[in-house]
Image (cartoon, rainbow, N blue to C red; front, side, top):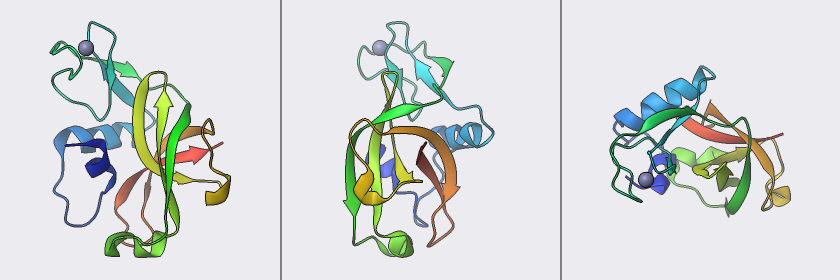
Length: 137
Ligand SMILES: [Zn+2]
C-alpha cells in the first residue's frame, strides 16, 4: 500500500491492520513510527524496511511536530470527500519520517513548505471516515 492510498480513507477501503492500528495509537496520543536497525523510519507501519530490507523494526515515539514538504490543494474531490473540498493534502516530515494527511487549521492558500504541523486523527466532513490530519499550529 502506498502512502497515497492510505490517506484516501474512503468508504470503499477495507481496514488495513498496520495503518488502522497506527491511527488508533495516534488517536490516543501515542503516535509512533517504526525504525529499523539502520535508523530508517517508516510510516505507515510496515514489516520490512524498504530501504535496507531490515525486519527488526522497533516502535519509536512520533515527534510532536513535523514540517510540510509538499502539498496539493484538491478542488474537485472523490464523492466520499466532496464536502471536504477544497482541501489540502500534504506530506510532512517528522524527523525523517514522512506522513501523508489532510491539512487543517489553516487556510488552504496559506499552506507552504515548512509549515509546522502536528499529526492527529479526525473525520472527513463528507463520510465521517477517519482521516489523518496534519494540523497547523
Ligand atoms: Zn532500513
